[in-house]
Amino acid sequence: MQLNKSDRGRPPRRLVYQRLSEAVEELDQRLGGLPTPNDAQAIWTSIWHLEAHHSTALEGNTLVIAQVETLLAEGRAVGDRELSEYLEVTGYATAAQWVYGHALDPGDWTSGSMLSLTEVRHIHELALGPVWGVAPHPNAGDREGPGSFRRHDLHRFPGGMQPPPWTEVEAAMVDWMNSLESISDTERLVEAVAAAHGAFEKIHPFIDGNGRTGRLILNLLLMRGGLPPALIFTRQRSKYLQALQRCDQGDPGPLGEIVARAVLDNLYRFVYPAVAGPDSLIPLVALVSKHVTVTSLRAAAERGRLRAQKGADGQWRSTKEWVHEYRSSRYSRGSGEPLTSDSESRPD
Image 1: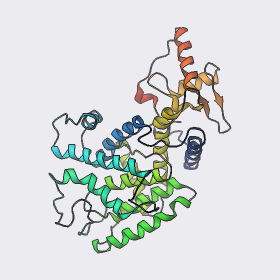
Image 2: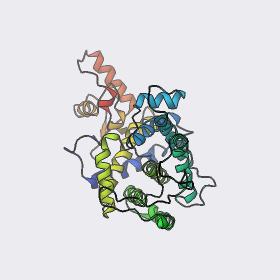
Image 3: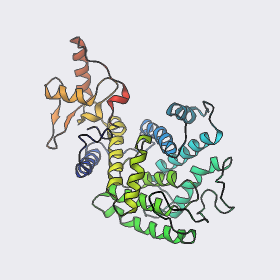
Image 4: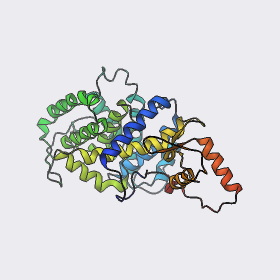
């Protein structure tokens, strides 16, 4: 299933939600559930690099993924960008690591609730603190630094939405926090979390960094609901902003679909391959690599060249071992099938 390609042939939203529900159920019942950062560090490092890159790039950061990976893995600033750009990434990355570590094990940060106001402030402080030291918001007052709510009114957004006056922000945030308590009881958790993300952005509680903080909170809520985090790619920026506008108008569906596709992508791209054993049956889309595409695997399964099973849901499933056997036999036959790049073979 090509989740984030062109609109042509894309499954309808209802089917996306259904596939996500089935994928999560399969993860929980057959593969041990979502692993913690301590149990599967490689998964979370890959997600961490991509999230720090794309979430800051959505706000205008110009570091490329290779520069972000070097910065986070080695602590080296490669290139000639402004210092503030490197600090934006490191701040976001620090906040994301905190989210990954505390989403499943909140400790004393929250007393059984989905989220605490202290956590919201702390995430903002972690994300904005480093860059604020060299490039604070030009209109910020002494009481509007990282972790503090704005004390300025904001202009109307391009779509027409007007954030509340600063005097109403604290009360609006309390109401928003209270609304989160019913999220876990909703039929479509991912759409409820997306709606909460839209509501947070509508309040815009901070003078700067609301987008980055909002996406970090989005992922915290997803993980506390048993889902992996969502990555909103820079190429999705226009659709993401349009979906936020629709959410402002009372329709969270488009934003919920974007988030659901992003969660599915992470499940198939990172989580399934890492937690599945060599003999575990998993969807073909989770078995792609730089050597084989999902299209070639599906064709091989349908022709009987790849050992696989077709489930009642219509999806083909195979194992790492069976894919290895198929590739070995393909090469032994002198197949001229071309290799594909890693970026082409993965659903994104």
